[in-house]
Image (cartoon, rainbow, N blue to C red; front, top):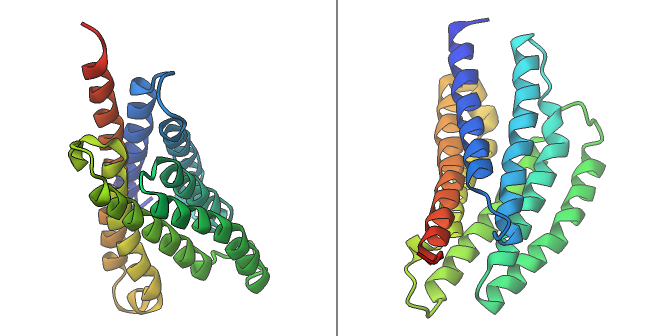
Length: 219
């Protein structure tokens, strides 16, 4: 296996594992459902990425697994942000995005019946839905009239990470053919940056929630 690929797989393995372990170590029964779902999503991501990495090490292209995992991941993200939305209008918008998700899944599989080929168009649409949901959640945070600063809201960090992740990958998927023809290292660099923002946001969310719960606990 090339050294470059080893470093690539090692970095993402550490990133996904760190995120999942942080969630597992900090999770409490008292956590609201959306945070528990975020831990579950981190575990599913670690499992799927491990399978794909093992196959990649054996020179097998199994990116088609994303055809099934990406809509699941998108559903988790949309539902988490829907439950956590504080503004009624934002909550309705994210609820509408949840309704649109199964419709988009049906359309993507209808237009791209080859399930063993990675569906870039569907992946782009899932990223776009997540981007809208994350941006709307942040708008709802800004519209919130409470005295709590945005930085003390755990899912604020997750949403910030998702905005960066989805923006980068939406751009990357939109120009994927050009990048593939011009320079593959740029493609890898975008992947490093996007995933680092996303999972750093997850980790910050877990840590922030743990600090809030610890501060609220009686002495």
